[in-house]
Image 1 (cartoon, rainbow, N blue to C red):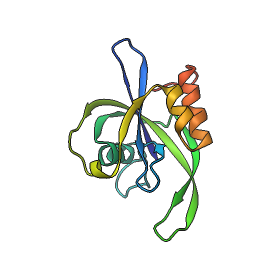
Image 2: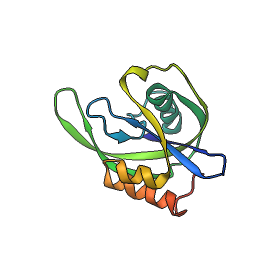
Image 3: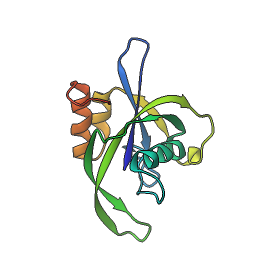
Image 4: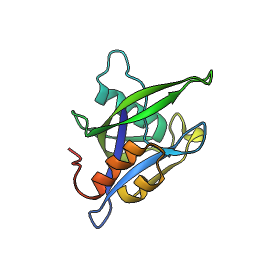
Length: 136
């Protein structure tokens, strides 16, 4: 599952937060595996706090999904269908678990679509930019 962190700027325009991968520096969403004892939306909130240092309210239902490959430490990869949960960011932390391992940056949905690696995620972000994908 993944979180799509978003907020509105002063003019009301939607911005999305991307983070860099620890392995290759590519821009991506905070994401991870399901967590025992937590729903997928709750797990997406935890991943967002650990990987991006953000806190907010998460949607109960996924806003979409994208196909990705999870790379393991041994070099193996496994295909995964990643559910995406909208996370309305209410606070950005100055210190968080993976701060020294990742960068975070706000983008318009169109900008984000042009720099993410996964084509399905780019399409989801393009839909958000065009107003076809709701945030709630």
